[in-house]
Length: 151
Image 1 (spheres, helix red, strand yellow):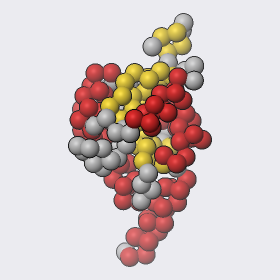
Image 2 (image 1 turned 180 degrees about the vertical axis):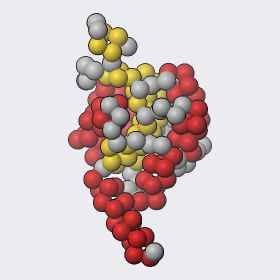
Image 3 (image 1 turned 30 degrees about the vertical axis):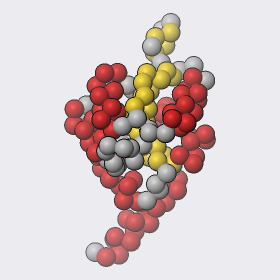
């Protein structure tokens, strides 16, 4: 993980689609300041993988075979409150995003926009910033605005 005096950002990815994991691995391999330390196919493996590697940034799908939604995020953050997790999903819905962010995710990206934003998001979240796809941010804002009309 170390190259000279520069420490690389360690990344772990959890997604049940082989092709997506391979694409992410290829993108990260092309970045001089990042290294992929592990991969998982299930939520349980993601939790175990985080324990084993304690990556700087975890990339997590919301829909995996054994655990859905924010549950793996909750489990990781309960044990590792400092964990920096970015959700990668096809679901832009405000409920999914809200639940993931409440569980402790620092990023929420749509898989359809990965080529443009993934590397930037990894760096931003590693630096302690939140990173949310613009489409998702818009849906969250609309949801909050609608809820404020009810009150």
